[in-house]
Figure 1: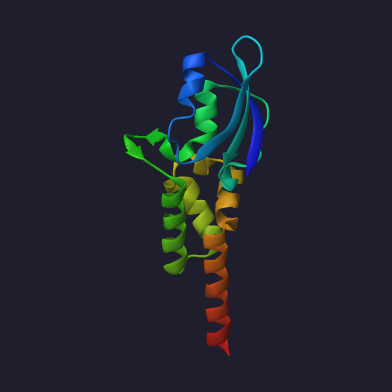
Figure 2 (figure 1 turned 180 degrees about the vertical axis):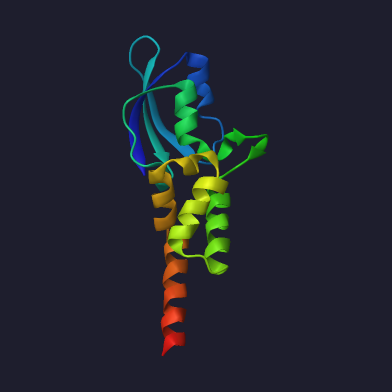
Length: 140
């Protein structure tokens, strides 16, 4: 997904945004006036389309989610996906897995949109379809 946003920061930090990031890629960064930069950012779909004005810190919080630290451990979208897969494979319903993610998942699981996007992701939706197909085959 691609978003065009404005980032308010100094020149040194603006250059740091180009450092090797695994969760986003800045396609273009143009200095407007003062400390404002217009950025075109390619990022993961689960973050959603973004627009508006960000500070350096709020930009990283939004676009670099998997690298944010929580309680000294790195929590990522992949770990939330793994948690959901294990729950579904263990026999929990998708609704129960969503509720469990809000309690035991990363801090981003507190947001309803994040959990909905996670449950609609290719990995989880494919797994849910496979489980439903197995259940219908067994009931025949």
